[in-house]
Length: 289
Length: 319
Image: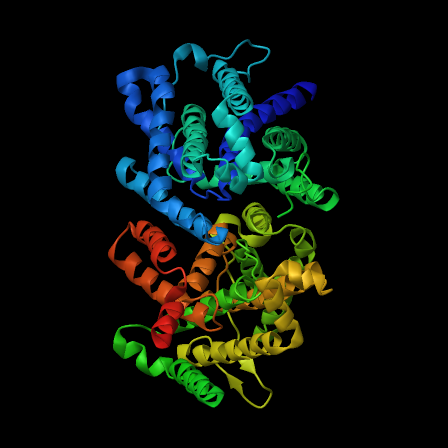
C-alpha cells in the first residue's frame, strides 16, 4: 500500500512537472498579451513531431536541442502574421483564432505524419529502471523532471535578472507605461510569445519520449495546464508552478483510491480554489479581470 | 424615420419566418435535405443561447457545449429510463443543463474577461470526463443509444414525429419559436436593458447600483437553460447523445457560429449556424481534411470579418 502510494505520488509529481512546463508557456503569453493560446497543445505536438523527424539524423540529444527553437520560430511567425493584428481587440478574437489554429495543426500533423502513433526512441540508458525496488522510476522520468527543473530555473533567472525579463514582468503589470518609457512593446510581445512556444516545443519533445506521438494528444494536455494556471493564480508564474505540481500530485493520489476520478479531481480542486480564494493560490489582488 | 426603421424590421422578421416555415419545400430542390434544416435550427438555437450571453451581456463563455451536452443526455436518459414522452424529455434536458449552469455559475461569475473564458472552458470539460468515464450510465465513448423520440400525444390525436421528417422539422420550429420568443422578451425587458448596460460599461453599471455579479449569474443561468433545451432537441434529432457534444471544441463551434453570423444582432447566430453547418456538411463530404478548412475559416473570419456577416451587410446598408 505504502509503495503504491509512493509510486503514485512520484508519478503525480512527474506528470505535474510536465504540466508546469506547458502551463508556464501558456501563462507567459496570457500574462503579457492577454491571449489564451488554444494552439499551445498544437505547438507541443508540432515540437514532438519535429523531434521525431530529426532524431535519425541528430540523435535524441540533438533533437532536444534543435526542436524547441524550431517550434519557437514557427510560433514567432504565427505571432507576427496572425496574432499581432488582434492585440487591440477583444480577447475573444485571439481565442477563436488560436482555436482555429489548433484544428489546422492537428489536421496538418495528421496529413504530414499520418494518424498512426509514432514512437520516439530515447537513449537506452535512460529507459532503464533505476533499481528493482523503485521499478517505476525510470531514468527517463528522472531526466524529464531534471529538464523541467533546469528550464524553469532558467526562465525565472531570465525574468528576474535580465533586462528582457524585467521588461516582460513590467509589461505584465502595465504595458502602457512600459511602452511610454520607450520599450518596443511589439518586439517584447514577439519575444515573449516565442519564449512561451519554446517551452511548448520542449514539452513536446519530452512528451514524445514518454508517451509517443499522436496528432490528437495536444488537446488532452491543454486542459490540465489551464487548471494549473487558474489554481495557481493568474498573473503569477510561481503560482502556475505550484498549481501544476499540486494537480499532478492530487491526481496521482486519487489514482490509488479511485482511479476513475483521477482526472475529475483536478476540476474539484479548481472549484474549491475558486470557492474559497477566487484569485487563485498566489494570484494578486488587483488581477481580478 | 423611426417608422421606416420599424417597417424595415418587420419586413426582415417576416422574411426570416417565411424562409424558416418553407424549409421543407425549398431545401430539397436546392440539393439539401430537411434534416439538415432541422440541424441548422437546433444548432442555431444553441448559438443564439451562447450569444445571449456573449453578444448581449458581453461575457465570453467558451464552455457552453457542456450545458448543451447535458441537455442531450438529460433528454436521452429521460426517454430511456424515465418515461417514453418527448415533452418530458425536453423538460428534463432543459432542467439538467440549466441547473448545472446555475450551480457552476456561482463559481464562474467570480471571474471576468479572459479568465471567465478559461474557467468556463475548464468547468465545461468536467462533464465531458463524466460522460466519458461513467459508461454504465452514459455508454461512455460510444455514446448513449437505445432511445428514440416518441409521437406527440394530444389525447384525441397524435402526431408522428419519428418517421416523418417534415413533421419533426415543424415540431422543432415550434420549439425554436417558443424559446426565441422568450429570449426576445427577456432582452426587451428592463433586465435585458441592464444586461446591455453591463456589456457597454461594467464599471458605470456598478456605480449605478446594479448588482453586476448577480445579473451576470442570472444571464448565465438563463442561457444555460436555453442551451439545455437546444441540447435536448439535438438528442431527439439524432436519437443519440455522445460525449463529443460536451467537448470544448463544440463550444468553440458555437462561439464561431455566433461571431460569423454577427454577435451584436439577435438573428446573426442563426445565419452563422446555417453557413457553418452547411459548409461543414459539404466539406466533410468532399475531403478528409475538412478540419483544416474549418480551422482556416476561423482564422479568416477573425482576421477579415470580425463583425460577422450581418455586420458587413449592415455597414453596406448604412454607407
